[in-house]
Image (cartoon, rainbow, N blue to C red; front, side):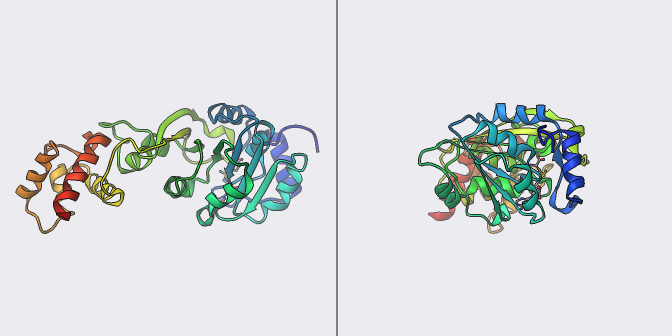
Amino acid sequence: MSTKYIATPSKTKEILKKYAFAFKKSLGQNFIIDVNILQNILKHADVNKESGVIEIGPGIGALTEQLAIHADKVVAFEIDQRLLPILEDTLETYPNIEIIHQDILEADVTEVIRQQFKENQPIHIVANLPYYITTPILLKLLHDRLPVESITVMIQKEVAERMAAEPNSKSYGSLTIAVQYYTNAEVVMTVPKTVFNPQPNVDSGILKLELRKEPPVHVADEEFFFRIVKASFAQRRKTLRNNIANLFSDMNKTEIQEIMDRAGIDGERRGESLSMEEFAELANVFYKEINE
Ligand code: SAM
């Protein structure tokens, strides 16, 4: 094989042909064939020779190769058994890569980090995610409270915008709060379909999540907080009071508004107008009311 990077149309074609590889749409297999895009991902991911990197879904190794060049060590989770011998071949010249054959949703990533990286090594997660499970993967990584500094991922543009949204916008919703409770989120770049083989049906974006040391708000009970947030967006055209009322069938609307008044929140507002601080205040007063 030539010495070109994997992430070029010709080299990718050569590898796919050599192994007669047929894409599995059900596994979200859209491989990157543009090195410039990968270098942009790397630039935003703050990866350097000190870094440990976790990748999800290496495919035929396009991003893995660039990560191996720029980081200390790369550990990549791949679910598709057929890709393992291919990766062994395409990445054979890089000694600092470990491939784990596992569904990321089943993985104990905390334990993998403990085993595979040096103590106190700065860890970053970098991936071109399989689009059919973008949200479950990111929420799992966040809920696991991994000791990582950042997560930089290529995902559907629309989902990236929802995760990084501001209040009073169409994209702002319970997913925004779920992500921003744990991270500072930013869409750093939008990406055209042409950089993939095969091309996906949707536009893509690079989302950068910087993990917070502490949540930005204090909540009495996290699970309850997220229930309130979810309920507030359940029917976007309804008032906040009506959406919240659906959670508490034993209270009438006047009682609901009285509790909302204690949080200083007008029940006529819509969920999309509330900041994270206001959701926290709202959840905390309801939590106090029902637990006293
Ligand atoms: N990183 C490669 C690239 O950028 O060219 C491939 C990215 S492709 C969008 C997604 C990859 O994730 C595929 O290799 C697919 O087999 C893998 N994958 C899909 N579901 C997975 C899961 N649950 N756990 C781990 N890998 C998964």
